[in-house]
Length: 143
Image (cartoon, rainbow, N blue to C red; front, side, top):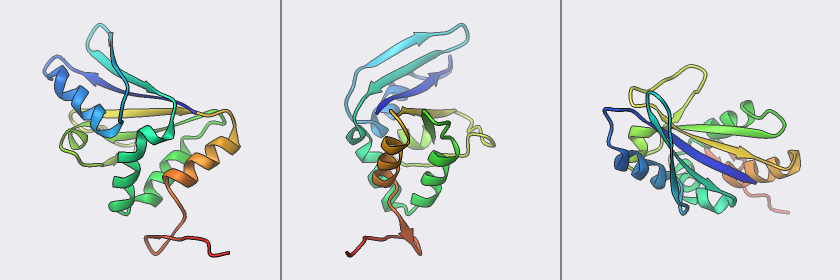
């Protein structure tokens, strides 16, 4: 798996605060700046699922596992998927998943783009990140 978390920094925003928001969601990695005409974009690349452990735990604590799984699966194109998190919520240490086709929060979002070596690796990740649930609780197989 390879991943990149990125967030736009608009002229009215503090770059350090956007970096802090991204680093809240993603552990480790160095932040790089990509300058565009109207904004800058901060990116952190990673190649281990455990970099997303904080996000995984928050998704489970908030019981939004099914929503996260739905987003990951609906965005899957056979090679990659993405998950978008409200940037302002992340700065405050919270998680709010964005329905990327419908929503655009006022301060934007953090896009987490994930690329896999195939369906098997993707399915393993989805199972780890968003385990199977029943009535909002994680189901463990007892075999």
